[in-house]
Image 1 (cartoon, chains in turn green, red):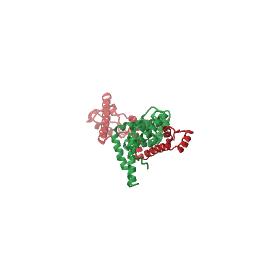
Image 2 (image 1 turned 45 degrees about the vertical axis):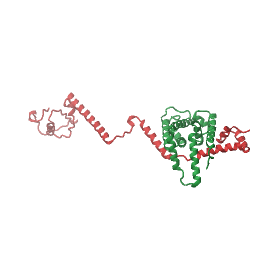
Image 3 (image 1 turned 135 degrees about the vertical axis):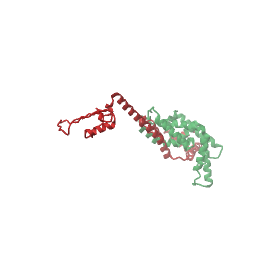
Image 4 (image 1 turned 180 degrees about the horizontal axis):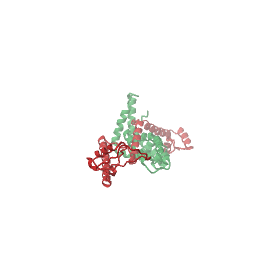
Amino acid sequence: MVGGDSETDFEKLYERAFAPLMRILVRMVGSAEAAEDICQEVFIKLHERTAGFPKPEEALYWLIRVAKNMALNHEKRKGREAKAYKKSLDSTRGKGRESGEEAVLKDEAFRRVQEALLRLPKKLREVLILKEYGEFSYKEIAAILKTSEGNVKVRAYRAREWLAGFFKNSEEIHVP
Amino acid sequence: MCPDKQLLSAYCDDEVPSPWKERLASHLEECEACRKTEGLYRSLGRALREVPSPAFDLEAASARLAARLARRKRGRLPLWKKRVSLPFTAAAAAALLIFGSGVGLCLAFRGGGEDAGGAAVSSRENLAAIKDMNELLEVLDRRGRAGEVFIKLPETGDFELKGNPVFLREAEFSGGGRR
């Protein structure tokens, strides 16, 4: 399954990958429920996989690659997920830390950043999400996406430029 | 000369190796335009990271996955190791069926034995508790059918005479024939 044999390898990978995978998936699909569904499916796929991996990292990359693809497929139902995300965001924000104009500005900024992320082309978004939320290196992202480090570097740059362009004609990004 | 913006983006991701990293840092100290680009890229990253994530209970999600995996593992056990849960009525019906089949088989064997070997199979009962001839005759009488009785004598052969010999006639007993 994961490497040599055994449930132990699976458990180690589970310990290592479950939390970051959930964090990435929540950001990708914008819904905790959908993220958990995908996370469960992908771990079950891994558990049932009979072919081994040459190295433990390969199993991690495989896991994230499959989860990412499932998240992108899930995105076809994006309208619903965006609504779910907005609902979730509405429930988490405005719970008393700030009040007045500052809180309103911050909420608006969060909403716009999230909107921009959801509109970002898939190939750029997956790199940015893996980098910003997964905290993977270019080398790791290249292994996950089965591409070159150079390509990851270009995509990260283009993602930033795309986001900068998105915000250019509107107000400055309010970064709290 | 200013560096490529791709390099600045990689620099923000801490992906520029030495000595280029240090040279870039020196350049940024001097160049306002590049500092502005770097500031923009970093603020975009900060903005992304600070957007609140939809709330989720990681521990509960992990427990749900563990339970699902355990269920699937059980599902892959060989048939004889699987736990089967049935509604009470179905379980009772299954138990009755198994019991009925057992009894049926047993009766079929018994019937077959009698057909083939007569009373020999069915009459093998331990009559050790029978104390005397009269009791033995009563037992045979109650059965109402013929049977063979084997009397095992003590191994010592050290007998003593008790009472007088008696001749019995079959006709004097009401049951079936006996030998």
